Image (cartoon, rainbow, N blue to C red; front, side, top):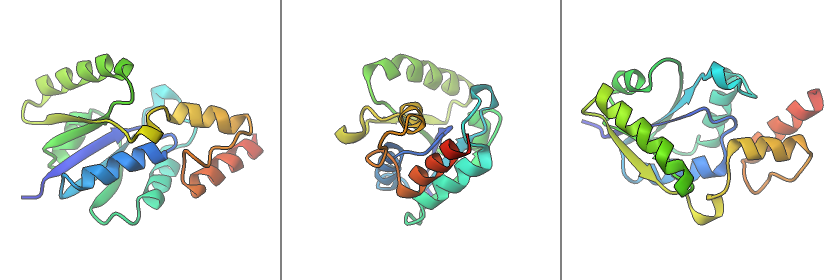
Length: 161
């Protein structure tokens, strides 16, 4: 049986911090599924199809990674993917309380599904998709935080208004 982890998020857009966590998860699991959540309540900057395509492009050199869009309950998606674990990133202590609450709720909904937390490499500890979008919207340099293809997508979006 393949050991499978789900790494869920909106990935709006995917950053090099996300990629770092996926690469490290690949050392721990046979299969890593990046679950791109539709999350309409968050009003994503990019639509689901665009976010999935960007993630596939950024992670294309990692053969054990699959990128799938989903909506609905994360635990149901994880069960459909036959995952044993949900992977989440913790950038700062402030992330812990929210992530702990989610992990506890997920454990109640799916007791056999484990939650695992990884911290990003130091150079990505402060990077978030929302900060990247804000810097890009103001014309700042985001090349340190995202793949060149994502940088171009954000630039195109800004130019379109």
